[in-house]
Image (cartoon, rainbow, N blue to C red; front, side, top):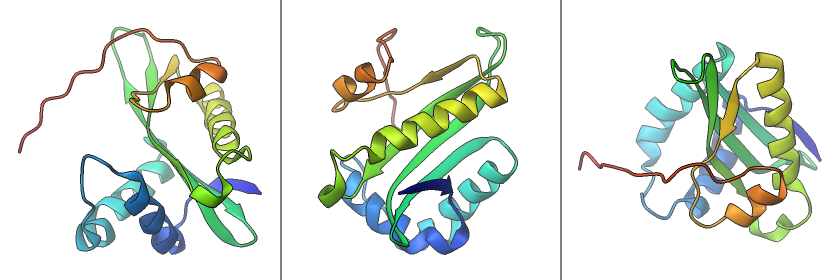
Length: 143
């Protein structure tokens, strides 16, 4: 398995993974193709995001998206991990861990102050990788 930067040609695999990942939203293919995927590729290219894929036998089997935000409170940038998903047939084989380790290495290189992750279902996974609970995550929806 290889972890690498996502590229435009990964769109089909990422959309497939996204469709199986989301629970609160339903992805719209046209918006993904025309707006969100290109913007995220651009944000990763200029350092505002980390967008990684795990590839096995030329097939993308997982992806990770994290956004880098400048902060006043932390005295530097915070990298917030927003999406991590792995194909069901390969879960439990270290793919998610490899993606997390890769993004943590990039956070160190970028001198991010911390890496955060809001999660409902995977707290145990992140705790096992050294994350600890520090806050409650609240949300207000515009719709």
